[in-house]
Length: 448
Image 1 (cartoon, rainbow, N blue to C red):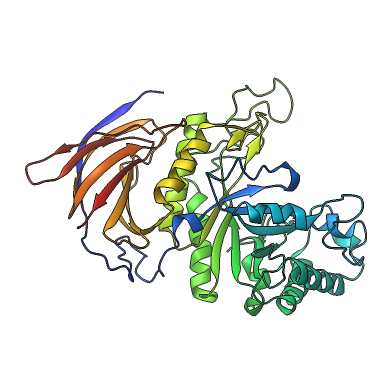
Image 2 (cartoon, one colour):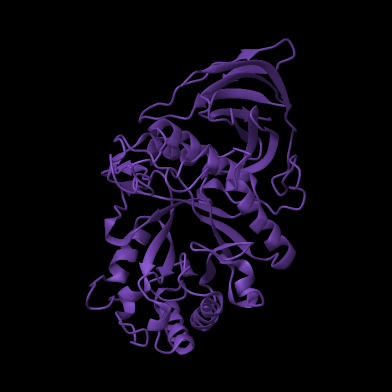
């Protein structure tokens, strides 16, 4: 890919002394945002039951989203009482042992109870069965119970095979059971958008009026340029795709209709495989990204999401088998060996885990993004993340005017070990000059 180098010099002005109890918002639309979460409470990862290796992924997250199949607990009869801590006999999962091991490893768990294997017509008594399951799940898994296994539960993943009225029935009654069993257990919707329901999401209007029964609005979004036959995806800041627009549309709906609810993005990601697509079949024209691009786009997405008025973002996926097809090479690991994206996300968590986003100093399409983060307990400590927001392997020179002192700078790594240091020059007035590219550069600053 041809490398471009911009001769444009861009100047940023950093504010000084943002109080620890407040947040300065420079970007349009950020004026009424609440204090942002710390990045360690923002960066999440999708996983799946026995396939997950808890110790391996500790460097990249402390938040897990697990696909918890409804039929694993009730078998082929939606009215069958659960037998927690065990799943149904046909599956034989001990949830207390499984989730308990993850909790012991330091993770918080968001269980996505999905209905993909249960057809709408298969429910015996939808309202009663959903309520009873919610009641049993909340009593056993909720944070008020002795095991304290699950922090939150999503009612459905992408239940597009249920019509809207039927999903509302399941949602309302299961949420009612959860609320009765454990009010401390957070309840989330399935994947939603603020427009007409589709195969992979519900219109958020489907659950309008039930705000007293849930805490979290759930969104999935992928940076897709086109679907079949390529499923080609773009870079996260691409203004021509719906990736960020769909999320913002949901945030706007929340602000207008349910302002006390959190917004969680629970799926996003990129496929990167070392293998070419098959010569024949459905995925013969599939287009992925390189391992380097996957790492860059994931980290840049977490940064961009941190600037939006949302509370969490969970990456899809944790591990893959290097298969060149949709969602089959999305892992941070390949056959449980870290990919470049693993090292990049681990560095992001280590670098910004104790920091929160405070402002977008600049956010210019096809030019440069620069975000400022502030330490949780030492507000004089800041970290700037600066990068080129394109997909063109572009580099650009920037000048940053700081009301503070630069301490060090390093580039997002693709390998283990010490990250690459980034040198900078100092102008006559103390301004910092450095070159940034598609991999974010992190600049440590103190305002003391």
